[in-house]
Image 1 (tube, rainbow, N blue to C red):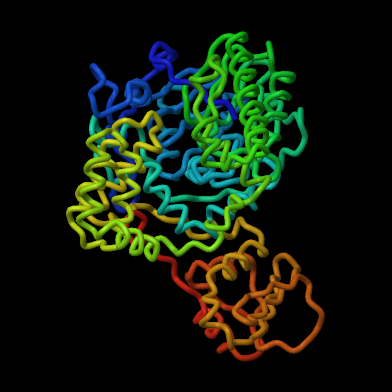
Image 2 (image 1 turned 90 degrees about the horizontal axis):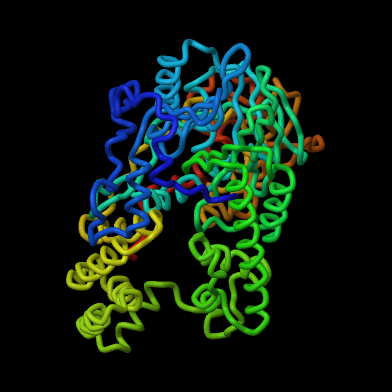
Length: 572
């Protein structure tokens, strides 16, 4: 939603106490978080950093317990985002319990050390990414109200199950965990490498203005696109605005929904809050400032949508629009234009820009080989790239060198020069994610792929998801060509839910049928949803009643592919 700024003058407001330890470890003693890994922000901005990003990094490097408003606290510096705690009549409601159980537990300990041993009486998720829910079981085992946006579990499943390996690999470029913190490396946080849990919601927020009371505290909610929430604490005049990353696109189903939601936020919240906070950024204080923030972002998203549509109707492609479209001067400081432009274009017109030359292009490596051949070979391409880099055209130098590396990944001169170009691009980037992506590319060109650290998913966490999502998780792992000639059917009776499903492997696709008619199958299994999740996780499931040939289950699992967590990005 709105991008809350980190102003240096505000970053220290409400400070209560620092972290007692900047290092968080898991049960085996491995470091899952180090708050001192933040880089930058002290002293004059060096030539290797954008001034705006340098200032943000300094503000974000401050850690500890902060009082946002009376009865509302945040623990900052224990993960990519903040742990927010809203004090109620009998305990404390936790909002967005970080990504990992270890960091969330450490944050709760710090809060209790200074505010007393208040029990956790509720949990609120303002979004469906793991940094909003993954630490939940670090603050409570359950048995309390858990509020989340409608569609939360379906959205969470996308990160938790379907595209998790690819998303984790991409996240290594977004957050740069392998980069050293400091003026030449990562500025700002990575994300914790601890254990990700999933405590299922007990209630969904579906309506604009829906009110719920947790531990005597009244919450007024605004559902947002993409299974997200904003909320107001009316009695405390405090507003929570989930932050959208600079290049997060609007909701894929309707790009205008963000504008409409921002307009509703102005209507619902204008003049009713004195403090606005977010899960990742600083606070905004003053009712007028909060209203202006909402109005500016409303205007920006409306402008970007409407101007993108206007220009695409004049024949411009997404890349051309992203290059030329400038926001109004009063909104120029707000980031996000390129990502919004591309999302709007793709929503209306899809991936293809209409030029037949780009309808059936060769894959990157095959194209690179041909480009390098046409340009006179690898040494000639490197020489051209050196010239463009010397003239300051780092973007085109990177394109040329990318072709040289993809045509011959053993071309050391091309790799070294591309790493240098990526480093220069990273040092000039205003956005932390762009900086990290460039610097991670440079690092992997020089040192190879660094396996991403992570504590993985807590055992049993997948049991919070619906059986439909669990079967979908199996389907996206089927190696289609390997299973072309397999045909088998398995019935799954989930005894605790009283539901029956059938999976049929046919023509390389795993098809799920809900409540199927009676018919012959190769195998029937009677088990619980927890046992189904354990089976998919590769853990022991205990005793399971069955009829038929157990070999059918082995044949199904033999058709599944294991993901490749460290696939190449900047090399072929």
